[in-house]
Image (tube, rainbow, N blue to C red; front, side, top):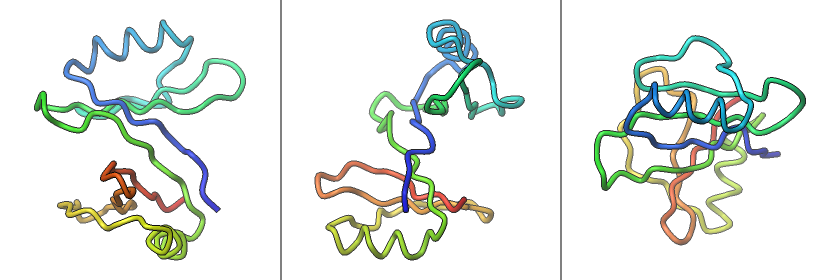
Length: 113
């Protein structure tokens, strides 16, 4: 089973984006941000996480979904059978995610939780 774990928002200025989105949504940092990554969560109640990712190119795909899976391999196979495609990606050694594209070419991540 998949669920939206995070909406990932590409930003050019991490501190400005963090200040704006925490105030705009009444969110807070989940934990100390990295130089290029921060996760915001609601201060009260439930709501989707908003992850901010530093992008360096104006042409970069700036927004995507992180889909959380209990069984990542099974979900990837299911999504591929529905028409998703594996995206070419350079993964870090400790990657807990796989990048796929929907039938229109939009990237999304399947994250092992």
